[in-house]
Image (cartoon, rainbow, N blue to C red; front, side):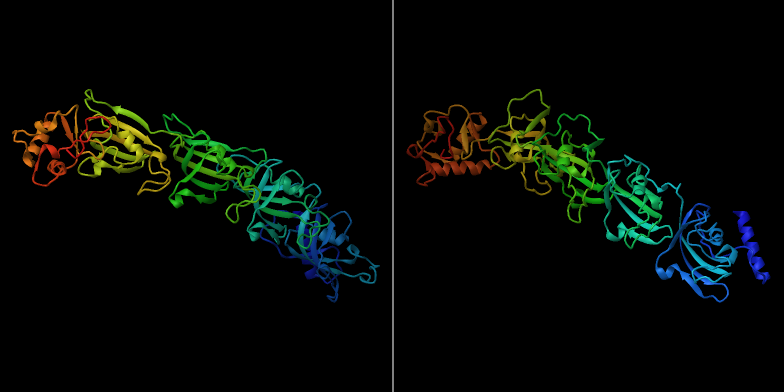
Length: 563
């Protein structure tokens, strides 16, 4: 080739310096592309545009431009005039050259068809559009590749990819980007041209390739409509977006599993989890974190896509896992509007916040119990307790430490959620417990302050103080049997009448002696005054025996506030 170029240049120099007849082809390479990956060789096929003129007067005798159809031929095998066979050698795609052909290398002393006169010197102004050879194969150039590659494409896979399609000259004939939609197809099943079926094999999601397809592995002699001319080499710049196989199942990769997991999710459980949802190329399509709200659903009951129903089985609270769901277990060929394209593989990175079953009870674990336990908390008792209230992922919601004194409540008075009520019963002073409360014993499906909907709550409890209480509606109860008859016992001075001071002293003596109990949490003087007023029916400031009444509850010796 180097010798040929020197020969051509020497001819050009001869033409410029000598007016004598041409002995060989003269080539003027007046526009050469900066990059020339391939030059025309003998036996190559070429596709080119040209204007043909006579050297003598510049008159045009032929033009491919006028026919709007490039000329196609094979070089060096006598299918062209000898001068063009020589003049096209070493040419690059997009190169423009002027080829001057003497008569003995053109149509000689005879000419042709009344178009080319005898002994005519011909000038061809050529633009080379394409080169290929029958021995060519699909050429693959990797432009970029992701650092990690979970799988590569194989025959029978379904792929989604973006591409720019150009001719070898760089002319764009199609682009998936212009349609804002990937090209989706099966590999190895004849749905693509042969060259693309081959060129797309072995790709990773996120990989970019340049795939150069010779015409006989593309659209061949027929081309394709007005976009792709006959015998065109095609160049595809491809970005692989997605790949799956119809036989694929859900794949699960555990990212973080907490230690000491004693329970995992099963069908029928209700789960709260955060997630990031992406396509395989990393594009985010949804995220619960952006909404600052977990996704809440039942497992295995058809409330989520089939693949997610499977992936949510066997999870621990606090576990993080990556879930890859093929489209036939997600949203299929239709996708979801502009949100999720058809045939998209979905990748979910999930973090389980909590789960429960609608049949779950309150779970109570005693973490510390004092050696002495003379009394246990029960309904109607007034208690003081410390607590921390958290979500199951450890997020602290409330704590009694933020207040100056422990929390106070009366058990059985519906002052706290049902689960906490149950967790506080049967405790000794100084006892500590961990209590897990499912939402049906907590705040249910409703939000409550900073407590999310359907949240399982974790309480750390310590009973600080316990005052035994009295049943609802009672102000005072006897511990055991009260005095019988009652009035003489109340009439401490025996004068047949009991004023407020005497009544107050009597009640206090019963409480001090452990024989009676006042309702805790209420001012003692106020309770005793109310009790006295209920018995002083004529409102004369004293109680006599005829006014005294005692109410008993279901046979027990529990005096109501009439006493």
